[in-house]
Each structure stands twice: as structure tokens, then as C-alpha cells.
Amino acid sequence: MVMTEVTGSPAGEVPRLSAVTRGLSEMPDLLAFADPDSPLYWNRGDRGCVGVGEVLRLSFTGADRFVAASRAWREIAAAATVHDPVGMPGSGLVAFGAFAFADESPAESVLIVPRMLIHRHRGTAWVTEVTLARAPSGEALGEGVGSGLGEGSLPVGRPVDPAAWNGVEFFPAPERENGEGSLAGSEIGAYLDGVSEATARVVAGELEKVVLSRQVAGEVRAGQDLRVPLLRLSERYLDCWTFAVDNLIGASPETLVRSTNGAVSARVLAGTRGRHPEDPARDRAARDELLRSAKEQHEHDFAVQSVVSALSPHVSELRTSDAPFALQLPNVWHLATDLGAALGAEATALELVDALHPTAAVAGTPTADAVAMIAELEPFDRGRYSGAVGWIDADGDGEWVIALRCAQLAPPSEASDGGLGPGRVIVATAGGGIVEGSDPQHELGETVSKFRPITEAFAK
Ligand SMILES: C=C(O[C@@H]1C=C(C(=O)O)C=C[C@H]1O)C(=O)O
Image (cartoon, rainbow, N blue to C red; front, side):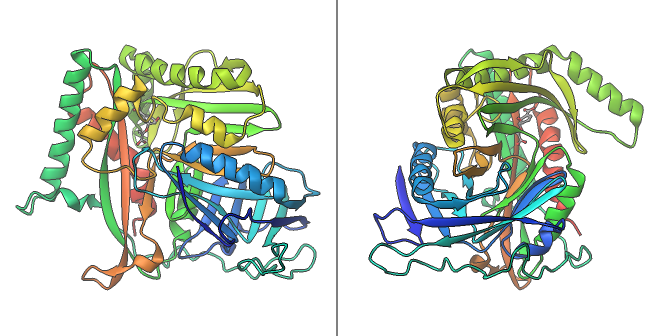
């Protein structure tokens, strides 16, 4: 690993953080406090959190990015002073993270500690303020200045105005332009060829399953309020984790691992059909066909087995829901299995992520062959797509999801003039499992369904 950067603290010194949590008497409108240019947000239904400002940022790359992040976080948590009378999952000191899919990826994996965290958990709400203490030498470290808020008060929020949104159109990613102005033909053609090639190699016995993805890209006008797509995602995808961490924005249905007070859980998804809410009979038929499909059940079993074998060394009493069930999302049906277990020997949520990543749901089986085939057949680096996004607290507990149904935006500082005035490039990625019998056109349709959360949330 390379820890390329620790902002907020002199090199070599463990940053000394102080976190103070206070209960709030009123339920906050979380998004009102998020940064419109670069929100930090984590929400599912009536539970969520928004981060304001940044006290600390740790950056990692390489094969041991999760382990290195876990180790760094253990040191920081051990050196921190935490005052947390609330004692809920996510209260006290918390870091948010977004991690790249591939060991070789140049994309940065980050842990970020916001200056202030505003949380809501059903009928309970709280705020945590984090400051960076002075070094023993007395030297001031970074900008960890408290807000000086009184008990229970919050900064002034700004409600989201959903009408103030220009809309973003997505196109097949431009780096695969074929020189004849036929963007769609080149990108989609390359994807279909990849699926055919992968299916042939599965049939030839090279591997059992590989997940191939494709990308679409667009441009977000500078100054657009990114809280609008986040609000839409949270309102539409109630069973998903809506997230925004370091300009990675999405709504993932797949819990990689959740670890709270010794209880571990996960949700495995694999097997997909597009929804047809406008035609209930057709919609039910799609669900039933998914539940009966031997191919989909087979693919799903790979994914469950990969999670069970990765988690087993770290947990006891591992149990799964009996048969895969159909998870209903606004855009797709998924075959789903929930897992529960008790944490065995002490391990942080990031160590569990390290053990699990990459699951067969996003890489394939066997893992190493699938990862190598992805590098060979996908003509782009996945960045953080299909990596992990989530949070970890001072006890090492946390919630991490697979970064799916998401898009990566260029940072606000990288807005550039694409002809329409300054804008930020946004790239969305979606894929699906290729097994024996996969049909390229069907797989393409599945990616279109999986892009819908993003393309619709960012549409006019
Ligand atoms: C790879 C993606 O999704 C994964 C692949 C699935 C499949 O192949 O059926 C289903 C859910 C996810 O585990 C994606 O959304 O990009």
C-alpha cells in the first residue's frame, strides 16, 4: 500500500481527534446541511447522516488499501478522545470511505472525517463535532476548529430546491469513440463483443462466471446543486443506501457487510430482471421467471458461496435466509440472500471488507481468474465502481455497501469548459454476471436497467 496523503497532520504523527456528540431535540432535514458542490451523505429510509467540512483525509492505493486503512483508523481511534452520550450506530467519531475496485487502480481510496456529522436514526437525532487537537509540541494542526455551537443547535441549513436542476444527459463513454462519429456503435459494440468472448471462455471451462461492465458519461454544469439527485435517489430507492462520498454518488442495494456490537450482516444479490411497473402482469411474470430460472439460481449460488467462504473465518453462527427471495427495487428485481452471523475474533468492518472484496457479484468465480479477465476485457479502469463505500466508527463497527448504481464526478476544482460553459465530467458504470448461456443483448438491457437510478436522478 501507499498512504499517499494525510491532510491535517504532520507526516508520521497520528492525528489526535476529539469528537463530541450531542442529542438534537428536533429531526433535522439532513440534505439542508450538505454541500451542494460536493455533498457527503449516507441515507437509507429514515436513517441517515450528512457530513459538513473535512477535518482529516487519508488516501490509499494498492492491494492492501483496506488493511492499511483499517490499521491507520485503529491508530487514529485509539488516540482520539470521544464523548458520545448517544451510543447509537454511527454516533461518536466516524470516518466515511470510498475504495477502488482493482488492486492496480490509480483511483484513490479515501477515508474522510467530516468536521461535523448530523445524524438521524428514526426518531433520534444527534450532531457530532470533530476537532483536530494540537500536537504535543503545541503546534496547531490543520483546521479542526469547532463550530462553537451551543447545546443542540445546528448551523443554518438551506432546503433543497428540486426545481433548480438543469439535468444531465448520459452517453456511451467517449474514450471509445471509433473515429466515425458513431459513439454508441463503438461502445456498445465493444461491450457486446466482450460478453460474447467471456461467454465463450466460460463455456470453454476457463472460469465459471465473470462480471463485465460498461460506462456512460455526461457533464454536470458547474454550480448545479448535487443535493437534488441525492434527494431523488433517497426518495425513490428506499431499500438502498443512497451515498455521496468524495464525489461518488449512487444508491446501492447490496450491503457488503454491516458490523454493530458483534453482530454481522450482509445482503448478496445476483440475478436480475428489469421491472415493468406499468404492466403488473408482465412485472410479476418477470419476477417469477427470475425465481424459477436455473441459470439465475446457479449464478446466485456462486455469489452466496463467495460471501460465505470469505466471512466464515471471521464469524460464528453464520446463517442465510432459506431460499433466495425476489428483492423489488423501482428499476429491477434481484435474487437476494441475507446473511447474519456473530463476529468471531475482533475485526474492524474494514478488515471484513478486505476479506469479502471482490465478491462474485462484482468480479466472478474463481475470483483471481475473473479479476484478470475483467482487466483484459473491460477497456477502462473501474475506479471506485464495484469497490466499497461506507463508514467506520471508533470501535471499528460500520456499514459498507458495494458501490453499485453509482457515478463518479470530477471534483468541483476540475470543472472544465466542454463547449457549454464550465462543467464536471460524470461517469456511471453498470454491469452484470456472465455465465454459460448469457445472451449479449439481454446483458446489455440489464445494464440499461441498472443505469436508471443514476440517469433518472440526474435527468431534468
Ligand atoms: C454489477 C452490478 O450488479 C451486480 C450484479 C447483478 C447481476 O449480475 O445480476 C446483480 C446485482 C449486483 O450484485 C451492477 O449494478 O453494476
